[in-house]
Figure 1 (cartoon, rainbow, N blue to C red):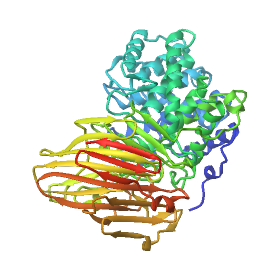
Figure 2: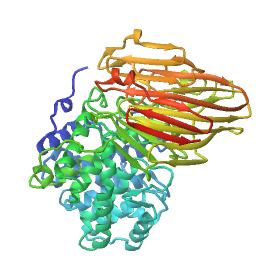
Figure 3: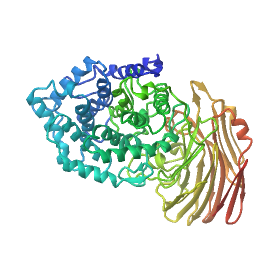
Amino acid sequence: MKKLPISENPLKSRDDLMQALRQILQPLKDLYSKEKSRLEIGHTSACYPSGISGMEGFARVLWGLVPYLAGGGEYDEFVNIYLEGLKNGTNPESGGYWGQIGPYDQRMVEMAALGLMLSLCPDKFWDPLSDKEKQNLYNWLDQINHHDMPKTNWLFFRVLVNLGFRKINMPYNDEAVKFAMDYIDKFYLGDGWYFDGYEKQIDYYIPFAMHFYGLIYAKLAESFDYDRCQKYKERAYEFAKDFKCWFSKDGSALPFGRSQTYRFAQSAFWAALAFADVEALPWGEIKGLLLRNLRWWFSQPIFDRDGVLTIGYAYPNLIMAEGYNSPTSPYWALKSFLVLALLEEHPFWQAEEAPLSTPEKSVQKHARMIIERTKDSEQIQAFVSGQHSHEHAHADAKYEKFVYSNKFGFSVPKGNLNLKQGAYDNMLAVSLCDGRYRARYGCLDYKVFDDYTYSLWEPFRGVSVKSYIVPFCPWHVRIHIIDTQYEIDTAEGGFAIATEYNKKPMSYKKVKAEGPVAICEQEWGVSAICDVFGARKAEIIWPESNTNVLFSRSVLPTLTKRLEKGVHKLVCTVLGDTSKDREEHLDNPPEVIVGEDKVTIYYFDKVVNITL
């Protein structure tokens, strides 16, 4: 397949980024409905009707188009499309009308982009309207002040709409805004961290929603709500030092949690810092974090042959999607283009791009994880305990694996009938000897220590597991104490590794399982798992295609064993390495000494003692 122009964009300058926005939008120009109020690009469905999906696409493009225009960009072709779409979408007599909303309505999400539009570009999208058209637009958006919504980041949508009303001198609802912002404060955990309505679920919605909207408010509301704006800036300042640890030197970031199809929204936080003039890190470092992430994403096959964004992560993939991912949902990623609202003179654009500067280890207890990275800063490994998502597709795979990596990704199941369908990388999967497996989903207890994580969980009633995960990146050690009232099958996967990389096929000679050791060693990396007691059987599992978020075909080293009723101790060492030193690392695993109630682990000059 021929390369798309955006993959050749160097993304070094403001002009490059403006060109990138045009390169993303231009393939969409003929895909709007005849009334121009809906973007119609696919035939798959979300949990809301296709008409709402079309409205979603119309609105999400504005996250990029509005900053582009606010920063002085010219794009008359799209301005005309959007003026016509706004007129029809908000006119009850038009066939393109977006309709009356109800409680918990998806259209509230999309109203936020229209609120930003009124705040930043009233000259483009408000002033040209007739009085009746203005009233229609106002009336349609004002619905958000009169319906219940989830008590999550959605509360910010009401805030942004009313900010837009204030800008255009239309009635705004101060009471509704104050309620929303006071409620959002209940989500604040400290040290810059929020949760998004659900305290056990800490993910990218903190940077690309809670902080993103807060920083927009901090920029636009400073003249009349100074104290709150300063508070939002201070929280973002604190958050930056932790969040930068989610990024690699090569620009990739940690795949973790739901909404991975929003892709380069990963770096929207850095754009929002610049927009709000918050130098939480040196401007050159903020610039590098944003631009390297965009470069990495635009080198991945995330667009179709026509240049339209697809559902998926590093390639098109419906298996990993959530129920709220429509064909137009991925355009939420355009939030990272907020930085285009800044003129060339801004210190963000004037700064020289600086390399990533992060510690090799970051204990992030609000995020319930320990993040370590290899010495070359290319691979990030996040060791997680206590995260839990209560309702989203593949929630156990997206939040509750023992470790996540930017180089090995994570896998979601295609089914639960066997290990091939389950794709249980970096999980301990348990079955009641019927071929149907369950992994960790919900912790009865958890702790994140400075040197290891702990969790107590139950895959089934009558089966409890205590798991201790000890990082020594790129190695880690896993210790499980299993108390079972039944005979069970266990399968413990290491890192899934690609069977093809940059179109290069794998070497099958280096995929082997001998005794208690399974190794998949390729030109681009190595994945290995070894049972310390030598009691488990090593196997190579070939998961179903399209289960891993980074690569469409993978292979998975795994340890298996059937356990009788009683108490059992399982201990293994696990390696996931893509560095040039991987051969040396493979030859030097951690030394694990297991006692009755204590485990001591030695790895070069590091010693970790765990009392069981």
